Amino acid sequence: MTRAILYVGHGTRSKKGAEEAKGFLERVIARVDAPIQEISFLELTEPYIPAGFERCVEKGATEITVVPIFLLTAGHIKEDIPEALAGLRLKYPEVRVEIAPAFGVQERIVDAISELVTATVGKVEAADSVLLVGRGSSDPAIHEAFSQIRTGVGERLGVSRVDVCYLAATTPLFAEGIELISSEVAGRVLVVPYLLFAGLLLSEVEREVRKRKGGGQDVLLIEPLSRHEVIQEIVVERATVSGKEETRVATVNH
Image (tube, rainbow, N blue to C red; front, side, top):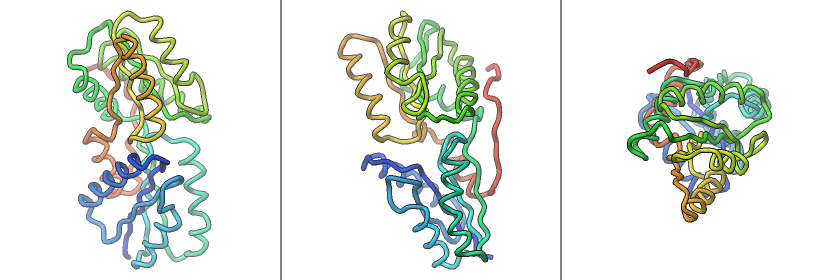
């Protein structure tokens, strides 16, 4: 058996975001002991899943572990990636295919958020508030996941308020979320993108934060999650031990 790893990122129209994702995965590949490793994307960035899969087969793969680089389980994990693989499974019935899970809600990711916040702003005050910004999905599971993340972030940082908003597909949208929290709190607003990489979605957040800072508001933007080493650790684990899922409620007291 010759095992291959096929990493699947979301993809972006942003050249900077695509380069950041590829650079991140190249660092992961350097740490994973597998004879064949390929990078692919679901949409917007080439190579797409079929091209990556074909390259694995061309190099002699008889078993392919697909490792999605996705924070939470929603439509892309449940439907889009399996659909993209369906025709390839039929074309290569002799190749065994496994799909590793999304990262899920993990205590160590919520810990990483807390560490990224403190690295950016220094001491977090009780009067500060956090605005979590998700990509967004119509899947109800996303709201459930963010409810856990929200509680975990609040407990770790000890802030007065943690709100959640989204960039697409569900409400409240980011424009509404940042306006609401900005109008109702007295302390700093710490904007935390629950995103892995730079891209057009993050650019929207960056523009709004710059505008508000220019207007005198005390608002700070935290870096995307892939800047924390724990994200690389999770991907390495997914690639090394296929199918291992470590999803935990992130609401323990620290």
